[in-house]
Amino acid sequence: MQHIAVLTSGGDAPGMNACIRAVVRTAIYHNCKISGVIGGYEGLIHNELKELSSADVGNIIQRGGTILKTARSLRYKTEEGLDTAYQNLKTRGVDGLVVIGGDGSFRGAEALAKKYPDIKVIGIPGTIDNDLFGTDFTIGYDTAINTVVQAVDNIRDTAISHNRLFFVEVMGRDAGLIALRSGIACGAEAILIPETTTYIDKLVEVLERGWSRKKTGCVIIVAEGDDAGGAYKVAEIVKQKFDKYETKVAILGHIQRGGSPTCMDRVLATRLGYEAVTSLLEGKNRIMVGQVSGKVTHIPLTKAVKHNSEINETILQIAEIMSL
Image (cartoon, rainbow, N blue to C red; front, side):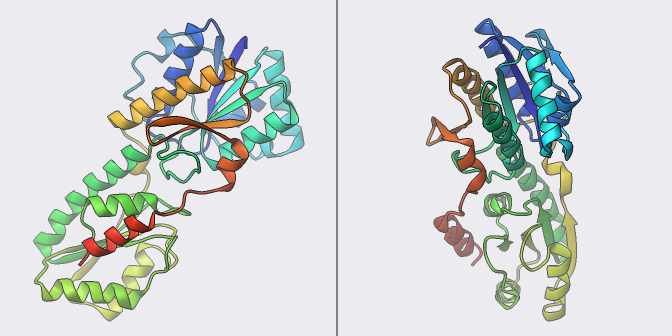
């Protein structure tokens, strides 16, 4: 392994910079040339690679976002785009590629490695959704749920002060793991996620029970992909059946994707960045490096992209019991 490139793809996630830093410094330690791809797969097509030094990644471990930028690339999904990306890597002498991202990013990595086996590819799970098979946590997830908890704690203060019912929408188009864990942590009265069916009448029963106990404010966490249609839609339906509280909706949006990464995300990102480079040096290819029960794991990229994490039934039960 002579020359490694690293890119970030898909949605940004807190901890990506910490991971880039680990990849760069581990590669340099092993006397490998290391380059960053600017703008994800689109950057590969446009041949936007920059050689990185240890100094280039100094003072970034605490920064959110990604210094390498990220972008969606429709061109990369075409045969022509894939071929162009490969030729640019070969021209630069790159023989190893580290891809930090989520499901779509790994599909792109697998496509390149399958068609051009002389470029070895390692994936690192970087997404706030925590929805990839093969790792307990993805880079950015811990920061995102802590951001949600802090925001909801603030919202609850005003909910209690004004006898309000807040429907707080969090990210999670296909997975409800942000909503579920943050909802438990902030004591939400109910948590609505894509993996389970939302029953409005049951939700109203929860609110009626809270009202009878003289609760002066309630918070419902809604994942954006919930089957009932998101926070605004659910709030509208519930208000028709239960109007004792003043109803408000808060969409947290992209604040969940930004911000300084937590200690957990910085350490996880550093460990997986190190592991990705050492895996390349050992000749491994077409795998994602993850962490399960505190131990680093390797799984095929195809398995990582085809299987989303399942919701833990015990956690679901805990969430329901805690809302009583």
